[in-house]
Image (tube, rainbow, N blue to C red):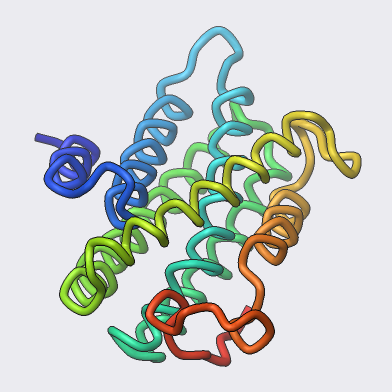
Length: 209
């Protein structure tokens, strides 16, 4: 069983709409896209790379808006901050990849390093963040968090695909991520502003970008 299959198997043990199940499924889909980019033929590498960039943008924005605040309270601010720093490094790696011809040896080498870093990041989430949420948040709360995550991601994806705010397939990852974050700002207002249940939002953290 490879890592993607393992993540899907673990997701299947949870409620289908649970935050953790949704994120595990997305981790598996990200691994699938890495494989498609590496194995692409007939000029499809650019297509798969664009799909990977789009998925990573909505995935990262969703985690930062929905997962990280709860991680601060359950696993601790240090764990949440470490994940944010990993995501910042990933953004820099994608920016560098975007400047390279996708069929070049330079791209292949840098892409392999990027895949390794993203895989490590996913494992850190799965073994440092997810267990704390599963033990300290009820299934009902995790399902509500999952609904909020999916709502924001689906809206961000739909707007990206429709060319909202000038976005296009070749838009830089930084723009895709910034747009997805704006969408989550609409779906995930501050608990201090709207009285959102603290069991959902967790503690407030000052996390780096």
